[in-house]
Image 1 (cartoon, rainbow, N blue to C red):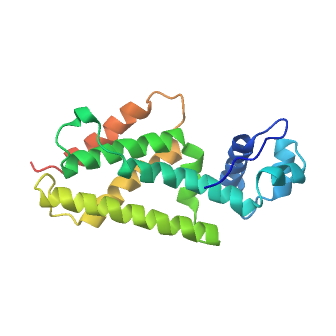
Image 2: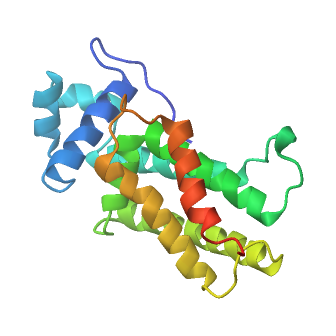
Image 3: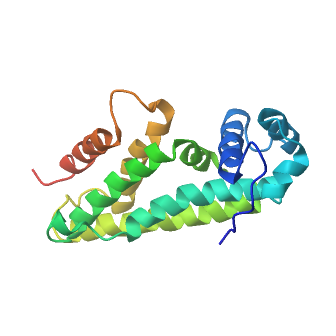
Length: 199
């Protein structure tokens, strides 16, 4: 677990992290230097290093934030009023939660989706993403086995297509637009699950 270091005037860790993630998304992680971040922040490099030991640590924190949010959605119990905790109810809960994570952490999730495994930090993030994908596939397979979803489509394909749709939100969603996270989650569930239920 990362410990929070005492802030310097102007920016705390979260403020530096937000500016860094924006720069990584704009220029790419490799092309973004600590010097570039210092210039954007109006801080010295040493002030950044007071908060983070390296550029890799900044990336690790950003990716952990996105992945931790998604993993928490899968681990979270269903609300008490959700009724029976069958697999399709849990899947709907995960889809809605994932949309909320994406909207709430749009820059960090955007960064996560651009990771290609060029560094140890990125490879660890990709390993966690694959584990998350396997959990979603298992949930889809369970819902199919219960007879709640059509089973003529491979569970892994269903998981990939569904999260492909959710992940595409980073390309066009703008905070403060017509649709908030709740409405967007309703739309995703309607398109994904209604098309997968038996006629």
